[in-house]
Length: 242
Image 1 (cartoon, rainbow, N blue to C red):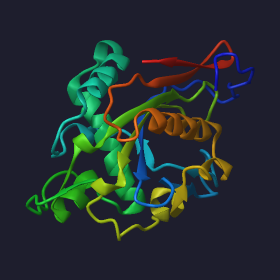
Image 2 (image 1 turned 90 degrees about the vertical axis):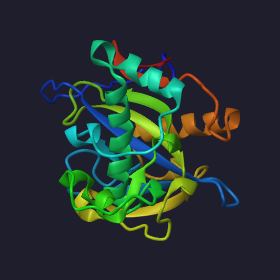
Image 3 (image 1 turned 90 degrees about the horizontal axis):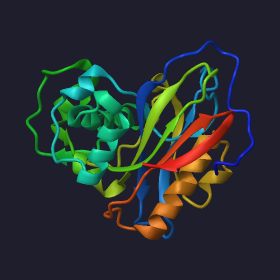
Image 4 (image 1 turned 120 degrees about the vertical axis):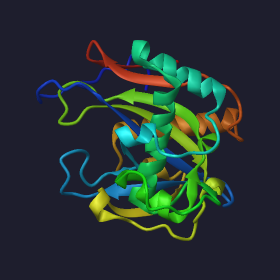
């Protein structure tokens, strides 16, 4: 998606301020071809019904304080903080990545983290599954891939940060399960090259292209690279680098 794409990104819904959100792309590289984890949203939902997406959702207050392990890649942390403007902080940057980890567990059953924490019944309801499992979310497993803001006039608007993590960081890889109560009717691993052919939102196809390009340049997800930022401007989508 270039800054010259002539499209009509605006809708007719009342103006809504975008809410912070995060998405996590789990990448499986131990197959003949790279695979990504995707889920199909319930057809009854108001936002993107019936489409295949990556796990994710809104950032919650509990994501600021939930126990964790590891640290964000330094360059990613700085980009996340800078992108928040005057309200940016390392704590809020970590909360974005934490929300992606939490939402992935809620929607797919998979824990991204390290076993060995003491199981506990304390803490917020949002992070109860992690507390009782003894898994600590591992921020060092996460890389910042892209950012996109839903255009004005949509029924939902999000300022979404897209993260990616190697599936080797999943603590319970054999426990993948769909959770319709958390919006996804189906979850499955999809070959990265075939994923764009699923029925997906336009932004998901764009993110898949960004991921493919990133893997060509940074196959181990270790380099400090700029992050694409996609938003509507003058009735066009523009893509810049952060």
